[in-house]
Image (spheres, rainbow, N blue to C red):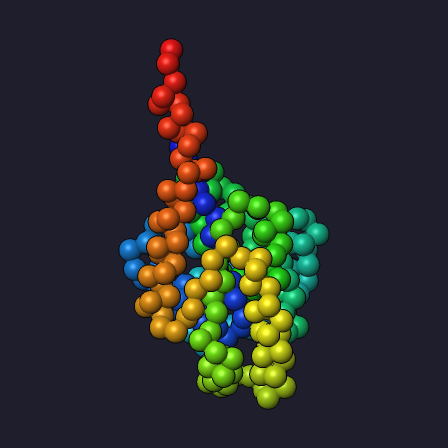
Length: 203
């Protein structure tokens, strides 16, 4: 019997570098499938529909909500973000691991819907560094920067809902830590126990 894939959730405050770390992970040799999120926010420079996100209108997104087509969704700074459910389920059933890169609100919904999911919280080295990263984007107004920092403080207090915490001080090191988590999860006793018990059964 094929082992079911593991659902990994990479989450953390806005500006912590989730997208940067996720892209670096998939540039390396890692056995993960990326589940692309849907969003109503406008594409940033260089982002492509169907690659970075599925960019939807508000009406399109709300139709997906009504039809229960999302594993999770959240509103963040005036925009919807969500994970299309069909791709995730099909990929896990085929024995492949899935990585979701989502906001904290969405991660809490996944925890309820998929208790077996492995939640990884990406955290900045400091709030000052987080502010520098948000400001460095050059795309946010002063009010939005303040809102994101206030939200980040609340989200960091939710750290205890996660299984692992990874500091994003350097992207390469953060990727190595996440890869170690993925490998370790496949060797957990409760994941391999059933297979080995079958080997020990006497006819």
